[in-house]
Length: 439
Image (cartoon, rainbow, N blue to C red; front, side, top):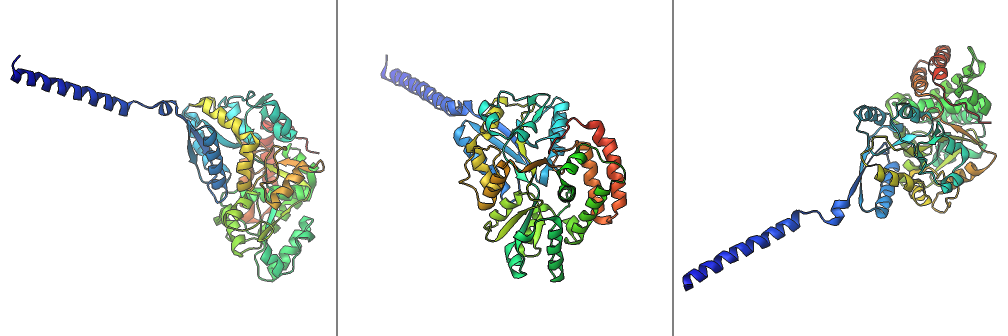
């Protein structure tokens, strides 16, 4: 072979070798690694977007991903307190057969629409003996339908709390310990009003905060037995107790900021934080809001349960949609949030308390510790919230939101009474699937 031809052959071999090496490099770069190939996605819908609650979810998600690094959380937070906007989005996704892998929903009747439509899968296998042992019976029962478990609670919120600005109380010589009854509360409100201070901050643009005030008045004025009668649909025409409850509700409105219909719940909390109002009646998610603002519980602000000895339950849960794209990842999430580790990551930030009774109180602030102790007490009466989808059928809850929202403006108690009784007959009794026994 001539030298010239030999050089030509070497050149061809070199080119081919380079091509092979380049091809290997290219293949190595484009072929997914083992870690990438095993990566799962977990799509979650929730409505935690305000101060405190967003931070709480982010901490929970981070802890989950430390435990399951091969699962990527795709969170879809939808603003709107109590999920008012998210529920509409979920309805569209469910009808299209493309639900998220899991989503936030309140325990109780709010889950019923999805269960009736066969849009949720039972999760009996998620509920271990350890969970059953450490969740209170009433909370456990709120996620059971047709003898099956359908959700895992991550927290317990309390709806019946007056949050107050301590500087304002101190300035006008108000002792929070003096507020024992609803009449005591209005006596304080009158004193503040005479001194030019707005007693109550209210933000009911999304309607449910007004209904929440109504439900607190319902138990504060009527008591546990009357509250039970109401959510079971056992109220007669021209009921004198209902009229009194509605009159107290109107009284609360008259002590509130005139622009309440233009504000949201967190904007009402901001009024208390800024000293523009002395108090607000809100669930203990307000605790998370205040802490996110840098306020210290029992230093800058305080909490007064109204009425004392009652725990108005608002329980956030997560569920497993029947057509979830990644059910295995969703089940890992559900099992995780049922642990002490998850609940003690989330709740100290959120302002709520853990539903597990074996969760240590160390990470919690003084207000939360007091609430944890009270929830465990056999003397405490637990009631499911009306405003937050637990106690009554969805259709009746929607009716009530509209009626109470209108009452907040019209102050027409007699009209509201008639409309509530009619709605009870039309939308509560025909759709009742639970008989509540609270006392």
